[in-house]
Length: 75
Length: 159
Image (cartoon, rainbow over all chains, first blue to last red; front, side, top):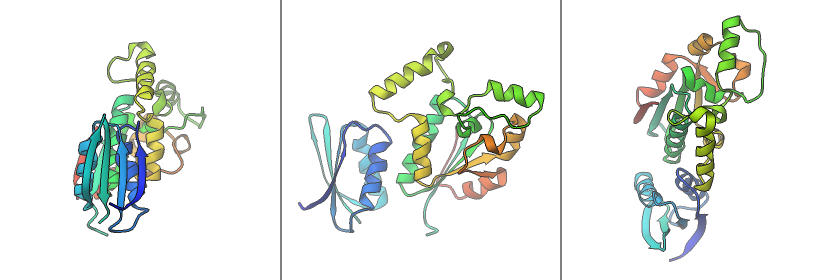
């Protein structure tokens, strides 16, 4: 997987992970992949729902020791 | 781009926790690419009040109101567990620990995300709030301004 950009949102609380993700994805091109790293437990469903609603594709979601890794392909 | 969804929030309350909820939802909706409007009325207007002490010309009653109402969100009480002022101090401590944003920062973020902050002029008159006491980059309106945004809103909330 070719990651264009990584957003470190570790330690941020709601609503910041989604707000930052939205801002960051505006900086990449359609088809490119954004990696988002979070620790907020709610971000798992937040970012998943956000990606679905905004038409982006959540290619992969990993969880390791309370850290979430999202891979979002921009629509 | 008329297919953008709309989120509209009537912010009636002037409690720190309720204002926080309103602004978190508003900022989240903006990240969802919604056009977001927060219509501030009654006690919610105090969110938009500047922190500095201003002395515009006011009647006796208006002066009393101005004294009793908080200047800005950071000076608001909590809706529960106020504990004579200890409550807000405690919750702000806990918020810091959990990295939650203070309401004043959420208001700045809302402006950054082009959320429309509307102040209800009729209740401003009732509470004796003058334009110069409120933040500069806001809009003014009444029920019709709200309905115009709210009638095709995907989300409409009264907080």
